[in-house]
Image 1 (cartoon, rainbow, N blue to C red):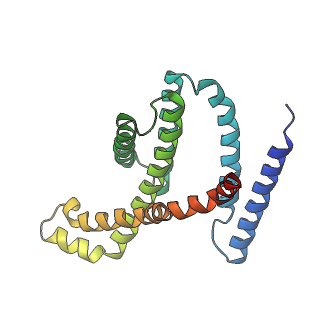
Image 2: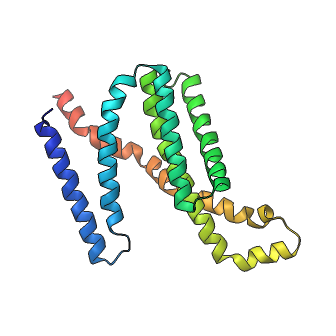
Image 3: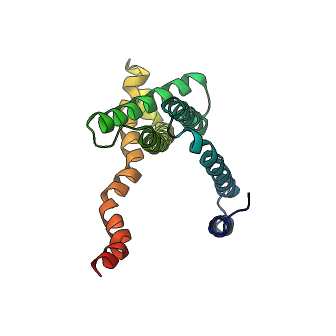
Length: 207
């Protein structure tokens, strides 16, 4: 099947932006600079495959459930690998992500805010799983970093008889707060961004 001109232009734009990113990171001496290019290539391939697969499953509730399960598993594994793989850690990460994703989807669909249909379950579920993965990764990495930075404090609590959980609970709360900063800032500016993107459409409608 030949690729459409629009798709070729999209692929060209992705290639150019990936090249720019790698070049800037290389000039700045940032380590693992090729990770961005690899991520872009993998993401492009995955989206291409998903577009083919989801065309046949988007109306079937069973296959939508399977697709979401695969998405969630991949997201949980990815987040755990970023933090250092171990089965206990994977169980903690997947449990935390699962609780968040389930709560959000339950509220969104049970309140009727979004139509409960296979296509919307898949779309909203994918977005929420992606957000949960990012937050889990950021929180976990920040927790590890902050624990190292404040290790004398943690040792002091342990010496006083505190459990590991009690000794690190304040650090964990701080890590979660820091992990939520990007999504919180993005949410705070959503109105401005959407308004700016809709301005041309509204202008044409008024004309």
